[in-house]
Length: 460
Image 1: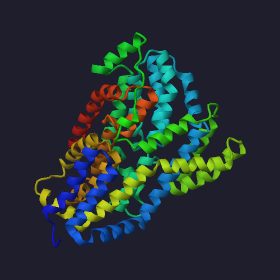
Image 2: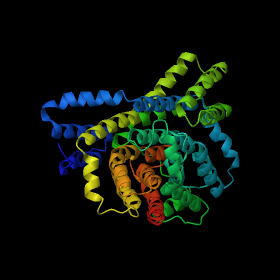
Image 3: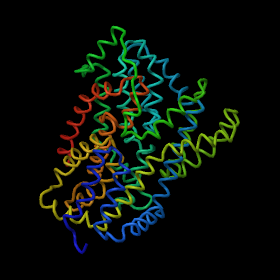
Image 4: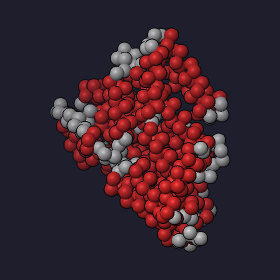
């Protein structure tokens, strides 16, 4: 194509439509790439796809993301398998004395286990379930508190799987220089309004300042009478979640040592934070140093044979394959869109209509709706960033604010969507019916989203 054209919109429209209909972000991205290649040169689709995919896999950023995401999965698998994560949860139970305090302990557990939303949701929910039952807190309320401290917390901490994923995308899309993805990500943290507001809202709910409303009120009244709805989660009905990753981490919890020691969770987390800071927020070096100490640390305690430890780490690495696959597919799609001059067309078409003041709010609403519809918080960000960021630059919008709007939309989708991976795991960990959890927490997520929308307009 010699110049930007409306035809360049066809691949992203296909991707969005397929993502909503199929709820499979990787498949949608690949299909969108193929459609784009057909528009460029129908006779060379396979050749061009082969060349682009090889180019993507040879990219240093992709290699870094694969290593870091996979190593995060390996470390998480060790934390779970040794029982360290469960031990940390058991220790926190000493501070629960009633409904509010048990939910507050749940909240602080979620804040502390910031490394990954999967680990967060299952550890906190399964740990606190018996305690909140004792104080007649509904499973729906427990699941809501757990979900509110999963993605919203992880997105605000630059030492999490979320930060690694999105920081890499910022580098690959030219928003950040090589090696500076996390620094640019950190600049946007103050503007991730939905995440901040979701945390504030859940705290107000815990303290009773915001009352239980709608179906949450019904669930709380049922819990006070001693009635709890059993978990009826069926993974065959949850087609949008990353079934492979969900199954992997649930199996890790089932096989976890029930008598794990607290230090086996605490030491690796402190090492990870300390080494990452020491190496100038280089997560890869931090992970390498952490694993280099954690593996012999566990081995000397004879927690498991070295061979079994390696198997657990490989299983943990494999649990991150859905995230890695999303990254690779998104980068292939971006390359195809670049060849179609998609960014140039969008900029030329929308620049006269869009202002720097309203762009962050519009981006937040549009991407939040897509993330909610598809259940793909990471996939939607990967699809949208090559379009949104050039547009933001063309209208001189505040880039950290726009990045904050995109990440706010991602965290909203992760929490609010009924079938996102975070929502599934929060319901699973709390022993709550999936649909019941989604319906009871929706009003609170919408309150935070509405306030975030106003905030983006005022800050622009």
